[in-house]
Image (cartoon, rainbow, N blue to C red; front, side, top):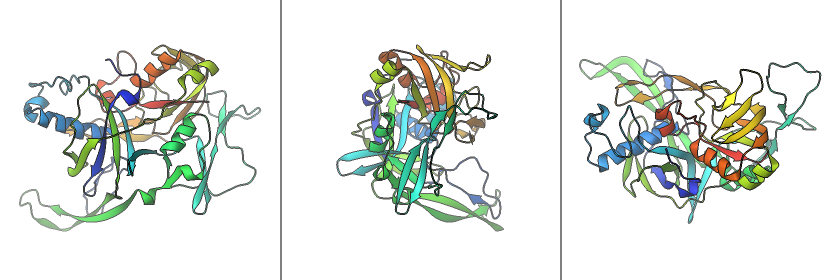
Length: 381
């Protein structure tokens, strides 16, 4: 598969929900008294599926025939053999005047401290801790060095300017963060269980769902390689197929300093989408069998010295073509950080690695690659 060298060369779209969204995770709901949480932001596969459905509709392709593999699409392929379509970026975003700003959850190596109406960030530093036995297999541990204890802060999102600082090796300041409450709120909705036979309400079967109500001018920015995207119109987004508009996104995608990373021969790998790896927390491309944790993928080599990995989660979903649930798989969550040294790569090789994602050749899962998993960005160490 041929991919562009940078997100700026991708086809980007701004997606704005026109109603509340039901973004269901992997927990069962619907039983009497159950409570259905919403996952925000949703898995990238949610948006990949919505965009692909719209592409098929625009092409006039019979969805049932496509699902059975009888009518392939030139860019989407078939359900069993995906085509060139790859979701390469998916983030929360908001429109501020003429500027579209992406927003990210703080990476795992940033510790946030409550400063009242603001927040203060500190970076964890990989450190060798002598005479300390741990279960960690790597030579260094991410350490937060602080003189006094402080209250940890949560519910903040990193703005695009702060993300660019972070990629350049600097620590974002308080103005680089925005509260979750400024972006969306939760709207609880009560549902009623229905009889399968009569389709009427059954006594005692009330349950609650949480819907996501985004603030004005808040939505999602998505970038796709290998397909022509619709220039406007609507998508069916989320669990109940709620309407969302899709339109062009004049997006200035943040870029790391590839030349400096190659020159300094070390970097951080930061997941910008969930990681589905064959070795659990360890990304594809690493060899752990001999205890060396060497990295070798798409012309880039290095040594893993430390990692800050968020607690694993489980991703699943619904396969429309097969009319059945997708397999439940453990993921390394977005924001997990891996420190590499002894890096051997040219700037062009680093760009190609970022464009390809953390997928081997041949790809371990072509379906999940198309859906936007295993995306990352490089950052200065």
